[in-house]
Amino acid sequence: MWRRWGPSSTLRAAWCSPGAWCVRVSSRLPNVAEPRSSSCAALAVAHDEPLLGTASVVRSWLLLEQPGPWGADALRQSDLPHDIADTLHHGSTTHDVRVLLLRRPQARAARFAIGEEPPTEDVADVESRECFVARSGPGRPWMEERRLAAARDVLTVDLAALAAGRRAGLGTSRSEPLYLVCTNSRHDPCCGRLGRPTALALAAVAGDAVWECSHIGGERFAANLVCLPHGLYFGRVEPDDAPRVAAAYERGEIELEHYRGRAGDPFVVQAAEVFVRERHGMRGIDDLRHVGHRALGDETVEVVFAAPGGSRFEAQVRRTADPTPRLLTCRAGQPGRPWTYSLLALHPG
Image (cartoon, rainbow, N blue to C red; front, side):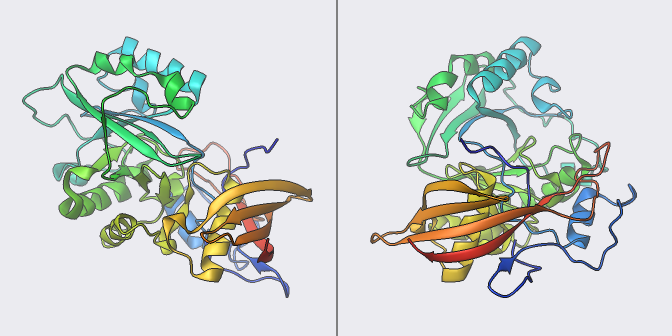
């Protein structure tokens, strides 16, 4: 049984011994913990920390509109009634469903200081709200949507069915994409500071398909963007980058420069996918399908992908802990060492 591995690493700083394609951070930096004076996002950039293999492992999603400020634990620290929040929290942990809060991008929110949350927007109807469920894999991704008459109606969603990959009975099937940008500044200041401008820029071209969202993982890679229903994660997405990432997604392609990985896959599979795509110039979302993987020992895994037409790829990937400890979030109590990945071999299956 494969164990989930900690986060890691994209192909910006790469060098290794002959025959091995490696991804790691710059060796110019000392092997000491970084001071707290730098933000986690700034530290990750300073270390050239790669993006690949860092998407949160999520297959089932429940998204609920909840305007106004969110705390570090957004679901239970918002204006959502406590009994609803507690029920959703219990259901999400029981059934392994990621519950996120959503709100519309707000121009005035971009002016708030780091760590602050915007107040509730003036709305005519504070009870009715949008709700979505999505399934990112395995199998064909899908999404459903419904405008709830009241927040409490979210409790009718069948989380057990959603976790099993079955339709949750929410309402209408949605074929258009959703774009989620994390702006949960009380969870990590980098998300608010870097996420809000990106959300606004994307909303200017993609309209109501864009939402600010609560914590999605990998705050040091802010601004973070998730494209649903496929669950594609992108990091360090600047305001000028976001329209390009979204345009590629709507063409059925993956913009690889900012790609962190596919949420439905384990971390090492995400890393292997990027290696194969980069090596063979494969950008179509459906160009690769994860078939399986097995441990070879010594932190090395063989990952097998299938491509249209019957071709297969076998990638041998090794993970190592970065030698330089540093704060991986702005609120981390202790420094950590992110995982990095190297491609040892890649050949047809």
